[in-house]
Length: 266
Image (cartoon, rainbow, N blue to C red; front, side, top):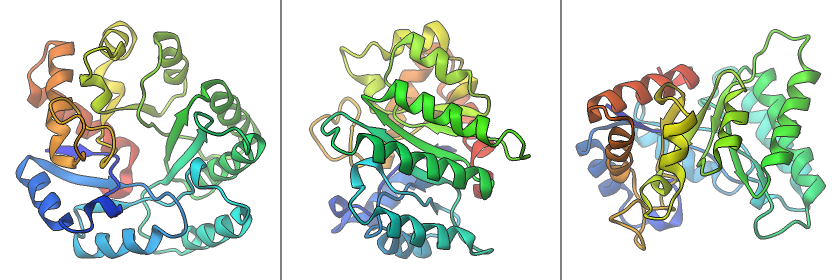
């Protein structure tokens, strides 16, 4: 079994054929798919899809940094209310984090929103699904500060640094956060990607989960097309090549890693 630890199957890109996409994923050996939320509008479509596939699709709850609006205080309040329900279905707080690639106009607000949601993960004992783009230093600083602020509690931060594509030094810094994995996806297969060398140099397979981020970042040979969970096999194959192991070993270890982090999906 393979777990796709990050997919947006509720996205409009799958509106016309999502059931076919899910069927192809299952046929390709994908045993579970985890769905990070991104904003207030995606919650209900995500939950509706999950309700059709219990035990296969698993939702998360969070506000993506690129989806922060002037109304973010109310949005967060509504999201936390969902997490407060004792029987809620959410396996993680995500997709949350920082993204300054296109826009830095909400520089401080992004960090405030991220810090609040890190607090949720600790308060409700859930893992984090962290998105970071052009914001490595700020993300690390916020996460460290939130962990320090809550050291007196028994809750321990854990989760995934989604879509990792950074340097060896950045990987080493992230791996110092005990209980966190690096999410590895289609970028690994790109011809000019330095990621294979980074993984060989500093990242053990025991600290990796696999993901697609579909419909985004399709792996080779599907670049330029819509990504989907079935394509995760190309990531698994590339990891097997990098670590010189059989693909079944990659599937077994990354699945174990994912279930270690996302224990509500057991």
